[in-house]
Length: 339
Image 1 (cartoon, one colour):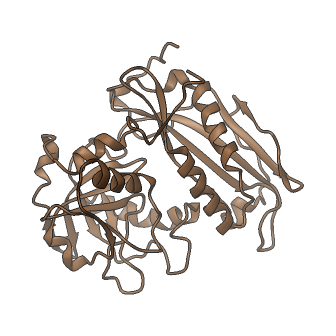
Image 2 (cartoon, rainbow, N blue to C red):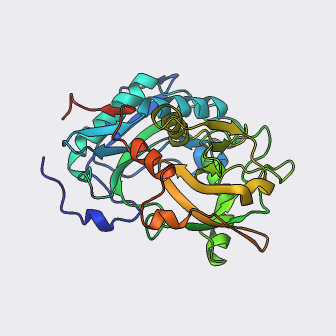
């Protein structure tokens, strides 16, 4: 299929409507068969559960074109698992895993012309989401829901592409202990909006959130996990039950250990350790691996010694891990039956 006439190399991370999206509705205790539709609009009651009590969760994953022209989707099975966990925590009926994966494949197949070509630096971003759709005025779960997946071609998440970011240590909290920080709930992101706007206004690219209990341990940013490399070459990531378990981070740790032979560790990382790190990156579906060049802790600047390497693509640890995590590897689901 001929690709759309899009300037793939200059795409930002924004919404571009594509031809088809998948929609399924839950009513009377069951999900309907669902279908692809050209209608990008959602029509719901002003009293819908999602509008009144934020009963919604979402996922994010990407489809890529490989060098040999095939289209692959990165780990949709793990996104399905994570969405099930989110739904259960928010009292939303689970959309079955096998149906989730099938819906992803349908949306990619229907929007094949929007999958960016290999080497363009762009990808097709897929956004599965579900929400309470019937009127709810008392504080309780909805009884009707809608599950949707739309697709949009995107470029880099951070403006300027892959360049060292400057982030600040935040005084505000992203998630509470025993709360919803470990699931992909819309309300988690709403809580971070004020802080990210303030960070941008102050000249920072992102916030580094710490644990809410002690404000001494690194957690994540508003939209990505952290991954560090110590000066002795160990790859470490924060361990906490209040951060979102990133599928990208999980894959990077496997690649670092099993493909690159590096020592890896998931553990508590204290702010006091940051000055001893050799490299730092933000990782996630949107962020991919975005290098951090400077962390500002209340006026104290922590410069990462290896951040200059990213500009010339010489970083031998996170850069090589990224090469294995970008959809061109055995972790991806190849859609041969559609393409």
